[in-house]
Image 1: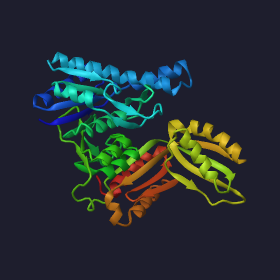
Image 2: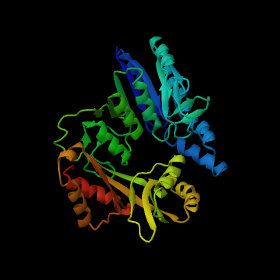
Image 3: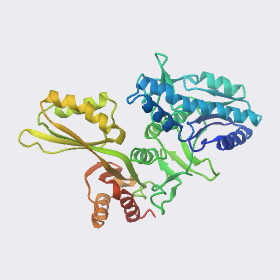
Image 4: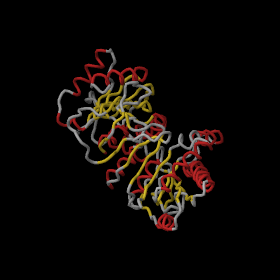
Amino acid sequence: MARIVQKYGGTSVGDVERIKKVAERIKATRDDGNQVVVVVSARSGVTNELIARAKAVCETPSEREMDMLLAVGEQETIALTAMALHGLGVDAVSYTGAQAGILTDTKHTRARIQTIDPKRIEDSLNAGKVVIVAGFQGINADGQVTTLGRGGSDLTAIALAAPLKADKCEIYTDVDGVYTADPRIVKTARKIEEISYDEMLELASSGSKVMQSRSVEFAKKFGVVFEVRSSFNHNPGTIVKEEISSMEQVVVRGVAVDKDQAKVLVSNIPDKPGSAAKVFKALADASIIVDMIVQNVGRNGVANLTFTVPRGDAKKARKTLEPVLAELGGGQVAFQENVAKLSVVGVGMKTHSGVAALLFQTLADAGINIDMISTSEIKISVVLDQDRSDEAARLTHTAFRLD
């Protein structure tokens, strides 16, 4: 008997008919003699609808109440999925994140998992039940409902797979694996059979929508091997694990585009020790994630900082920094939203030269201007005009022979 954790995303459980199809797949897995734990997201579109309702009644709703509201989406899905299994003659039970023993910190809307007590799930599995767990949510030490941020259901599934010592973790979505680029943008993209944690993490953090980056970090930390598969067919997916074959032979594994970016320019701040520290501490305290950072050489006693944040946090960043700049004694904040981040990722970049040169030349030949550059051991990212980001992705994909 194997123990399997399966996660189904919002499109996989988008309506009643799809929930029934998911229930049939779960039943088939259980009928093969396996213990099954299922993590589900809210139905596609539900979370956005709830957010819109919240903002319709209050322009700036409290984060505590947003967690109470958004947790409802997954709770609907777990109950419907359990009912669908009952209709197929399968004994199933649904649990919220709190009931499943997921304890988080106190940060609302972006909570981090601290511990998981799987006893209730273990007891249900040993009683012969299929366990359905609400993704994306948990409870903190104060008894408050918390949510894990966008894509948190992936994290829930992988986080449960670790203490449950699952033999297999399957992430079901609307695509049948991880591709060398988004197939909707690059028609010649290919599915990748195996990919390393590091490459998957860089692609996820660079805009690939297949997996949430925090879930990949967790999988790497605890050695959870998982497979990204489609819930709409039975094709093999992409295996994500520590070591894969022929890693060095493939220089670039994939290309990603992140259009959910905004560029923030903090200009004319005092050019003295501690100015940058105060700016980024304020952003950290406001839970704003900063990605690429460029600082120019100070002149005439002032300097400029340019960095990127998620687009939805751009206005929040400006509001956060205005009092900081007043405290520093000068500076202005502006932001630009019509930008995108293009990234090329591959472990083989560690041992091959010329990747940056080829990327920059490819964009230059097309007349695409680069605004910012960031590099890591296995990734090169550039910020460019969003209107040309899809074209840039296709050209880069071809240049690195990924078609």
